[in-house]
Amino acid sequence: MSYFKQAENHMKTKAITMVLASVFAIFSTPTMAKDDAAETYNIAVYRGAAGCPGCSEMVVKSLVNTGLRLHISYIGEKEKLKLSSQTLKDFDLYIQPGGGQDIPGSYKALGNEGAEAIRQFVENGNGFLGICMGAYLADKDWIGLIDAPLESEVGRPGSHVYDQGDYTLQLKWDNKREPFYYQDGPYLNSSTASTGFQPVAYYENGDIAIAKYKYGKGVVGLSGPHPEADETWIDTTMPGNTTAESKMQRLLRYFDAKKRQAQTDM
View 1 (cartoon, rainbow, N blue to C red):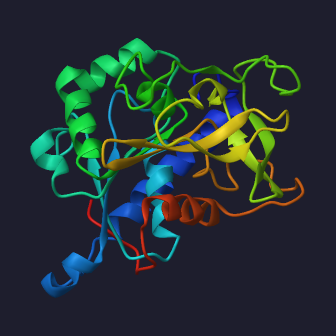
View 2 (cartoon, rainbow, N blue to C red; view 1 turned 135 degrees about the vertical axis):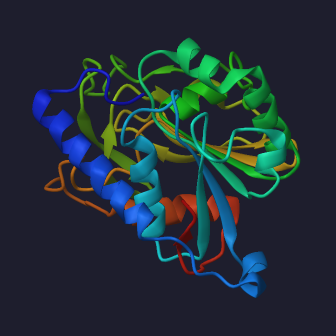
View 3 (spheres, rainbow, N blue to C red; view 1 turned 120 degrees about the horizontal axis):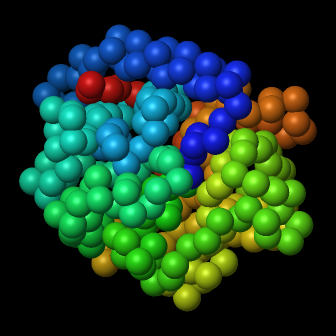
């Protein structure tokens, strides 16, 4: 989950990030020709009451900066595109970003109809990426894309996470250590029996931080920390620092997104 109990200076940074990301998105409207449409990878990024201010925009910013050929749209209660089975037919991947501390409230914002639309979308062979709150929402008690409940990494032995504040944690991914922004996200150890389970990255204590699953014909990716977080959210002085776009590009490999020119549709 993200940004419920933030220090004042971090809130200011986040507000600036949200504005910059929004401006970036506005000036990234696609100029894609119809002949190119079939070659793009279409991504829906949720933006609404189940998320938090700036979270969706940071996801979009990191995706645009990957240099991949992506067609990205916001989807949500107050967006032009609403969360429904009909809307999702036009996409390859749905991203549920970070939110607050209220999982039931976030699920309520999506609604049973929205949750069913997501399940059908993934079952039919598409992708779901859940980040922090988005990962919690995917568990068996809510949307139900994995067969286990999820709990926070906060207070876990050796986690070095002692409360719901902001942390920069060193994760192990592809046998390398790199810093990630973290704020009360889950660990995924309980989900190892879920269909298609594949660990991707680990917290410092060995708990699973990022994992891939199968649901129906589709792919589910869950991340406790925030791969989309850029230098305004994390401590970039930590060893092994990598960019947000690098992390997101590597995550997209698990959804078979081929390298293409980044485009957005806001």
